[in-house]
Amino acid sequence: MAEPVTIAALGDSLTQGYGLPAEDGFVPQLQAWLTAQGADVTLVNAGVSGDTTAGGLSRIDWTLTPEVDAVIVALGGNDVLRGLPPEQAKSNLDAILTKIEERGLPVLLAGIDAPSNYGPDYETEFEAIYTDLAAKHDVLLVSNFLEGLTRIDDRAMVMREHMQSDGIHPDASGVALIVEAVGPVVLSLIAGAKP
Image (cartoon, rainbow, N blue to C red; front, top):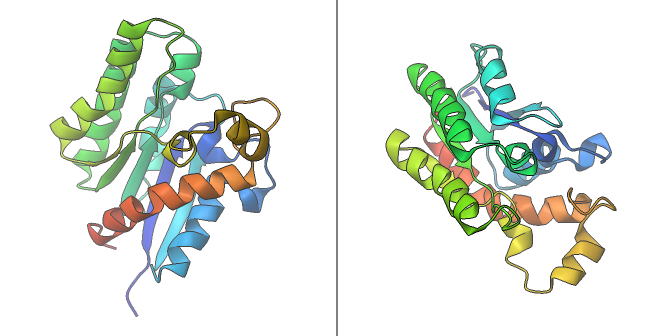
């Protein structure tokens, strides 16, 4: 029997499963989706609500336990919510990816669709972080972690049917849409991992 691939999902409330029963969060739903695809994988939830890229950097060393074979990095949303400088987030994510690279582990970097409320320059600069770093570190990229929701044109329906009442966090059905969009790239991550 081959060992299952162990993936650590380093992220914030979206990874952690904020406001949802444990089984409805991103990690358990992704685990179930991957298992249904026949993947032999164990996901570790390393999501902390409210975490910024700086918080992720402070935690990366103890997230990379010996059993971890690959990492999903999904951070940056809280940096944007706080209006933190894009160059700071880029520096933190760069350092996180470097530490993972030093361990020789494959990575899936998940970006965010930055809102335009800080102006178009901030939005453009923030979104470019992920494509730039994915190219620099040669890692898999999902440019928008929430793509499963944002690709639906009817925003009002998405807010009503797939989001929690705070309007920020997806509900269980919203998480399922995110998993459907991200899942195929995670299968590629698994294919590149060595248990």
